[in-house]
Image (cartoon, rainbow, N blue to C red; front, side, top):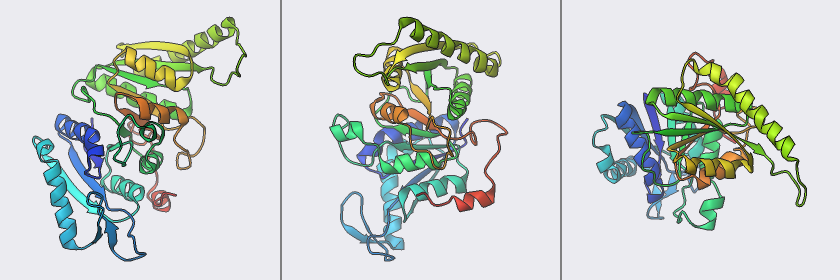
Length: 323
């Protein structure tokens, strides 16, 4: 399923949950794993001085320092490296999101694995639960392949995915998420839950919406899933449809806990805009920060649907820089 996986890491404890998933995936699919660390933007203009992510000291970027960091990364993940046949450790200097995206395109990877944060903070802290890492957001926006975001330690991961929850809002971007979720469930043998939350978060305090109206919207959403999604799955029967009303991210998280979901798949955004310009949707952002299981963000069909059109080489070059 995955032939090439890019694991973006700072080699710090905050990346440990993502590291576990990345190495497990590489072993499961005998994939080529790229362990990639970006030093960051030089701290003195064009000079090659950076601040080491672990020691906090300013270092000069030279061949011996790069070699030391690569070896340090290998030592950090020594136990996880066992059983992974094809591993390449690399480091570079530059804006992290730009370099991660550039590496992903250069190696033509099928999946990017990374954490939701780069900060060393407790998962229960206010900041951890309310702020997504800027690097993760930029990578999710610019990636042409699925981005697997792991913010907490997980147990099942991809060795035994028993249940996958697709959170859909029927947008164009959600169609790409659906195709990935279905193909993953079919490949692994997981149960797929097609979930939609009828959004009632826009109601003002004291305002009520008739029960009849909500039931009509729920019925309409279920019918839409049955008529648009089910025919595309071509005989795949290990699925269930669930539609509820409420605040979307709250309902997705509640439902995922009820079903002990091992993976949540969602579109990167819901607005009909250019994927290059789309900001991470508020719903998927809330889910990423609070989910007990990994979340996959899908922005495009490039690496999801077999035979889908890829961006032209000349177009990719123009979009190389992430704003």
